[in-house]
Image (tube, rainbow, N blue to C red; front, top):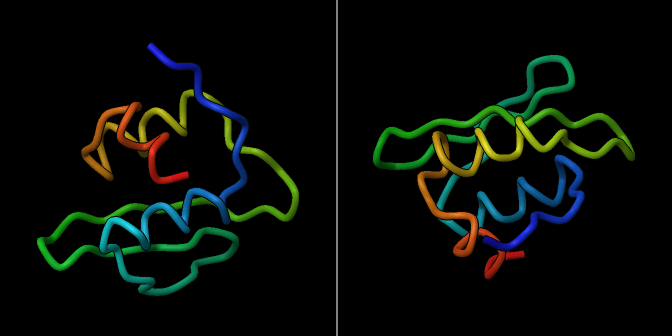
Length: 75
């Protein structure tokens, strides 16, 4: 299993957009993206800060519904 690199919220948001998620709105420092099929993800956007490994895994597996390997292809 490939190790995930350290990524910022902005970088993860780019991957979500490549997967068809559309920016919906921002609440505080959290960007909300929605997919036409009903999936939704909230990505924190704190300037220059990287997402923790647990949160990144949660976004990949539960929200984007792809494997880690597929995610790495989109980076």
